[in-house]
Every structure is written in structure tokens, then in C-alpha cells.
Length: 110
Image (cartoon, rainbow, N blue to C red; front, top):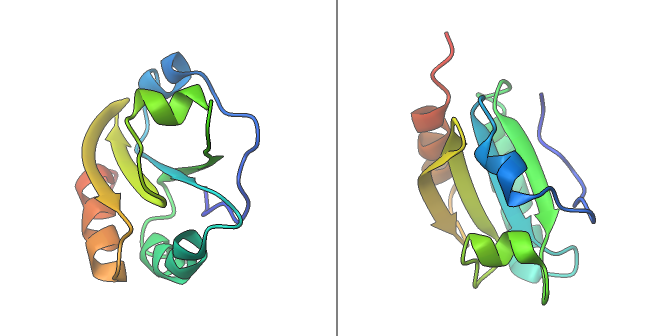
């Protein structure tokens, strides 16, 4: 698995996210969000060391139930999951080190 470059316009159901067995990063944002665009190189740099982590890049916005179920208020919001459970959350991350550390907490594969 690798980092996704584009936002999924159709979001999965919350039950699908909760049922994930592998480590996953759910990224909420929007293509026209400046904070989201600024975070992309940081996310890519951190992801380079964690290719096994699944990346779900979800376009969020008004009326989108998945983002509301996670109580997303600002973009980008990165939610780090292990076995469908939230382990960590970063909102508007400013450095790759924080993202890499959170990825390391969920990426337990050898």
C-alpha cells in the first residue's frame, strides 16, 4: 500500500472503517484546502517509512457523515487506526516527525 494522492469523493461507511484489521491512516480534507496541500509533502515523507499502512484520503465537507462521525472540525485531520480503533489524531500537522511517530505507533508489522 502507498500514500494516496487524490481524495476519494465517495466515502466508506463508518462500519467499514471500524472493521479494518490493518493499520490505517484516514486523512480528512479537501482538494482546495491550503492547509491540506501544505501537509502533503509532510505526509509523503512520513509514509515513505511505513508502506504497509493503508491510507484512506477522504474528501470532507458539509453533510459528509464520515467526517462528522469522527468529529472532524479542521482540515487536514489525520486519524491513525489500529484494528479499527483510533490510536492517535493530528490536526493540521506542521512537521513530518509527528506524522511518522504516529504512523510508527500503528505500524506494528515486522
